Image 1: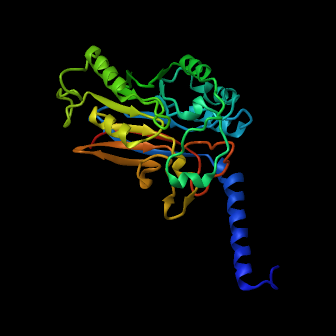
Image 2: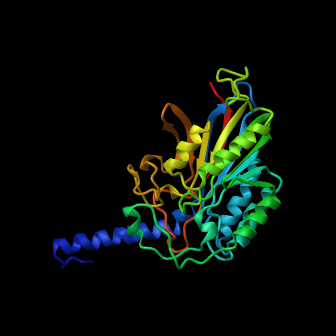
Image 3: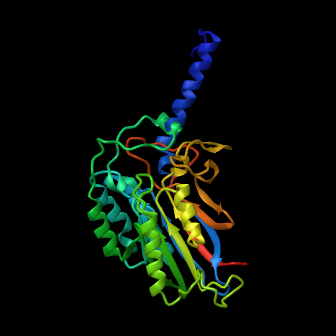
Length: 325
């Protein structure tokens, strides 16, 4: 085939065939190759019991995606102590049907969540090359979704809404402090509101005093609790603010890990201002003299208008919080 063509034409034909094969693989195979990533995060006080945290993000759920729904539901067998959901659960006007099927097995498991932009607005067709120019902007024609119904379902599961809010939980004998923001990609984060919520939480908290984390004698760092910051999109302004407020672990999604990656190179884009090399996985976030662990999930879905992944399989993360060395 193509023997009578000039060399340039044969090369172009080969490149086109390779591209078509890669697209077919990314759309038909890798997009549905759901993966569980396991990591240990050493943030607990010495002697504390490990805490199993299931991080879910970017489901972009449509009602017909039964394989994804069943895979997520089966994660309940891991018996997590806590679920953190970092948004973009909806991917269709009837996406809540699939979200219910996927997450109902986690009813009664403590959880926290924040919104992503796609929990507010339905998917629209975009030029994929536009992402190389920076984070995607607002689309005026996007359909509004029923985020209120999504919140009512999460509330029924017993999960806490961290959108520009703060809260605390006791999990396996460790005091966990959380704060989070509404979707930074849409500019819905209100860091000044979060700061006030943190002050109010710590004022009423039995572990709170003039400094945070608590300096009581509970280990080399004097911690009796762990502070976790939660956001959908890991923009620098949000991560830096979280670290300034004492977060030891930052949890986010949104990037899809780049969604289409180059083997050996990684993500081409992040759709926010986070460094490309931190587009997915566990890393260290540094701001000034402070540091925190940062876990960015590559997410479990894609927009129904861009159903492809390459060198970046969909994932959930089982983070085991363990004592610091």
